[in-house]
Image 1 (cartoon, rainbow, N blue to C red):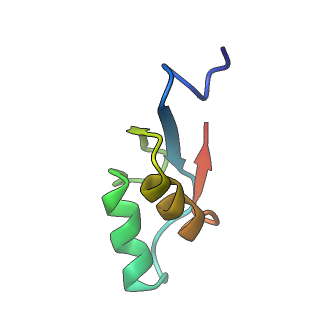
Image 2: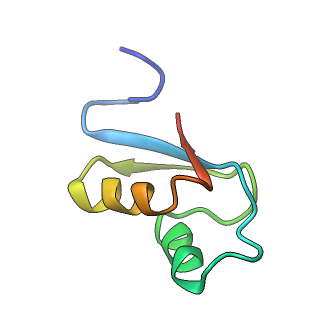
Image 3: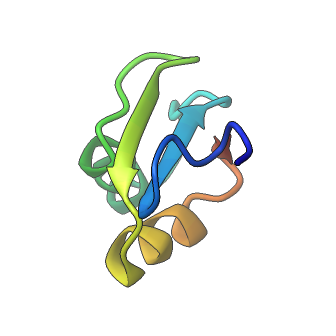
Length: 64
């Protein structure tokens, strides 16, 4: 298995761009993904809801 899947059914995301100057709803989505500071990482369950959140702020995050 590759590094982006720590175990089946999970996905790791990393905040790679600052949320400064972004829409409030996008900031809330980033916080909902469990990301705070730049370069912070969060491992989440791979669900359609989480995938949708990642898609919404895809310009701010990177899937590892």
